[in-house]
Length: 329
Image 1: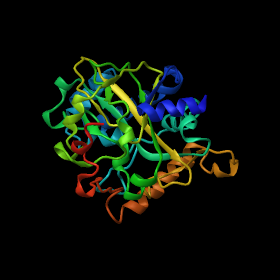
Image 2: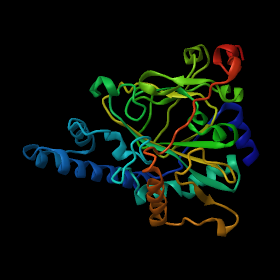
Image 3: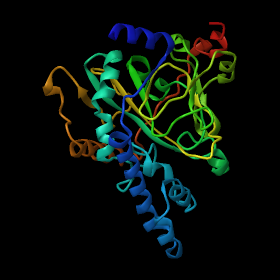
Image 4: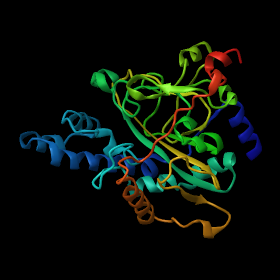
């Protein structure tokens, strides 16, 4: 079974695994923690006359209200990693017991093990995304990868040079809401992952994007629609992007990443640790408090240099890895 699953994953670059998670037990606690963050932001930044009413709003309206408060780098309060730049002692990030439980979830790790084998590390390239209806977004946020559209890219492209070459990375994309074409699901091009890592460049507003990615529009595109409880596994070289949310509802998701033990995370010094191993001695991080300590220690290392991570965009000489040279695959 494992070899068949891995073969299909490597052949098409993705897998949709149905009915892995339970909304009430696995996902709702994270949404509750997000709402707690919103309440904290309202208390801190909202004018008093509006505060009482705003605290009674339901999730979506509460987030819309928070979005009007002109909070610098609002997405960072809900993101599961340190900010890329300007790391400070008081830099906020979304690290909760509910998220820890998701990272260590047995059924998620069972699915990942079929691809990577039994020795698995948690990779610190991870995000949560609260994607509002595009018509409600300020113009500057339409192409923001956490709240708006995401351009065509490969996940290996945002690792260090060593990570780009060596790290066997698997992305686990988790919808908290039913995900469809209308509300901005991901799309991918099956089989293109077999080309390996492609040239990337800095696209609109600095987003990492495959060079000449418009050429992918001539290929077969798969809309990765998913129900609550499903997970989507993505190959590190699978080109993918997300389309605009044209619905009237939020599309909320998380993307976790794992890699094979013994390989660089590609994001040092951010936390990377065993989440599964045949040798129990390898499991040195076993609870939320230990995990949080790792992030705080990483923050201390990042403060003097004022950034959490950097990565060189993959740009190969002589355009050997340029999509324009490989489009006739």
